[in-house]
Length: 159
Image 1: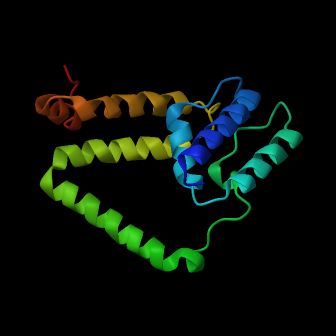
Image 2 (image 1 turned 90 degrees about the horizontal axis):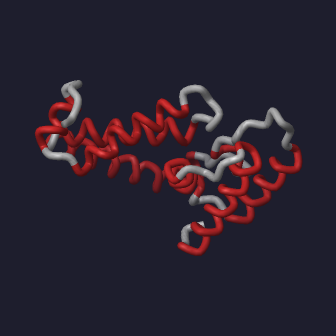
């Protein structure tokens, strides 16, 4: 599922699932998070699981988590070398950012935390809108002045 064509088809599939279960298309943040979580899975596998969920859906069916759209969880054995290399690269990138720019590090860490929460929280959960607000708050700081970034990280309100 790693091509632009598959990305668009995936988004259409996710929007259809979201419209059916929640009455609204999937939000961009949710679609991006699900795409990242499922891009190693064949599109046909995700589509089959979406169809299964919709066939069995009741009025109480909640929006599925990414793991529910794959046949089985990836195993560490199957991806261990690549996973370990990716984890080392990611950790080194975060460490370098923290060393080089602690304020930007805090902002990016908050953005990542919120994106993860949005991907794992059902859209009808009471905390979902809180996570959306928090994501928007930190995400807009990417383009803020250095002083506003510093104030936000220190707990103040940006101008």
